[in-house]
Image (cartoon, rainbow, N blue to C red; front, side, top):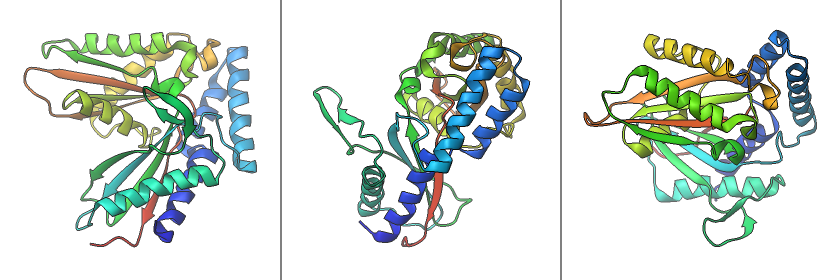
Length: 279
């Protein structure tokens, strides 16, 4: 594996696992200031203390350091080949081991002793960037296990889609460590809808959607979710979710896939630029 690639990936792995994203932390602090429920406010104070200790002492924010995901985003004229993708994958695995992050990967059916091999890689292209970017996204499975997909009839009402999202959140409850960040993917095929839901989580969550219709839908869903009174760690209160983010893609006239991917409050990701790639 190339030293330059490993150095950059190692920075991303450390930053993602030891320092909570600023946009996420800002919304947690805002929720703490607004919360009136004493138990919920106490839970939010524990989260804030946990984040501060992790950052100060270079410790994992959560004991579940997740299934490590790697989003490779290539700009124009960047050459992507098997060797480069393998270098990035192996660098994430090596960094997890080097930084004493929990080995959580097992065979899906035979299980066995957990290890580090098995990083999941997504490849995307973006003409607005130059060079190559990699986002390291440790996805905890307490919330990942609450993922839902529904293949709606295209004549479905907006309310039925919203109700599906609300039911998903209600069923997740305290087990997925609220307050949540809710990623929603609408369109494509079944697998792409779930990909969009996950991709929504690696983008900034403290800014409204650039699409006015989607921004309105996000706002409405967030309001409904926070009226569920699940609250931080299931203790009630105003904040069951910090944000709802939606991404869409054209789909077939006969279908309407909707995927929901939840993150717990510890939404962890970090982006780095890989400089020495061929173009």
